[in-house]
Image (tube, rainbow, N blue to C red):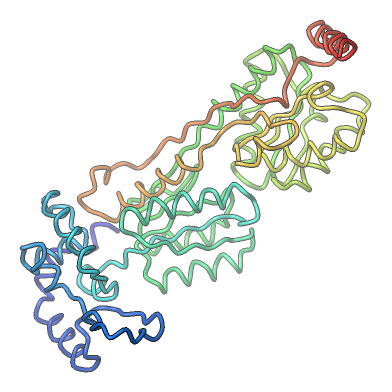
Length: 407
């Protein structure tokens, strides 16, 4: 828990003498002064004197014209240090080429400055985009990141959690959309700061990112209804996952709000993969009547659905409109470009990093906040259009024919 973690400044004062003796002992053994040097190859014999091998905290203090204690507080990112002073110290760090010893920093501060990030599967393009945004933001704020994917395997997830605890991570963001409750409990009981998507236990060390699925899916349904669609289907994710049920229920609610209802046989269960989307769309296409539009629980499902339709006589969007969810980078490069509900990876990553820091850093301005809202919005591209057989669709088809004939 944040309350149980030692204050970096207080602990650095208490451990001052012990740390100096450890530092002296390491110096005597290695001839270094608490820095890490990675030789990059044999130096060229140029006749020029080599640069001094060791740069340490004393060099930074002299360059910045501050005390060693101030440099220590700055590199340990103690937030109470004056901003202008911290800027001067970081400039000196860069100028002298000082590399802070992360192990020594952890010894003094009681923190590893490592954030754990758990995602579902690295093969889904949504998650690499999320990982990249998370890592960029965390590194910019002075943290390293330890990343692992569960692949929806309980044993793999348990091993991943164990390794993160062994590395003494400061906190973990569980950015999956389905994880075993028993494994969640193991994490929660460690009392380290945790971030979950959608739902988490009501405990002081747990923070939750609340995705507004309802708003995005409502926009998608209203967009299709405004085009004239009345026969709208839905391909869900695996219904053992809480978020898949949430998205399906949001679809049903949004349909009811515009006075529509989807027959049960037009709501297919997928598994959030392209293969699952393809199989679900094939089942829909085999029905006596095909809906004029389909909303998919994620973009991978929608891409699979597009591939299934490409193998039939049905064309997108002339015969059937398709909507995805997530807005992965690939969505805009599909043929046709995919209309989808955007759930911003950057928004998710930024909220996750800030929520973790709120749990880790006692003086963080949002330390009492427990929930971070994540907005969604519809991005309209070319995979949606008027429903087949409607007057606007037929008028558009005639206009296209006349245009083709003239050319």
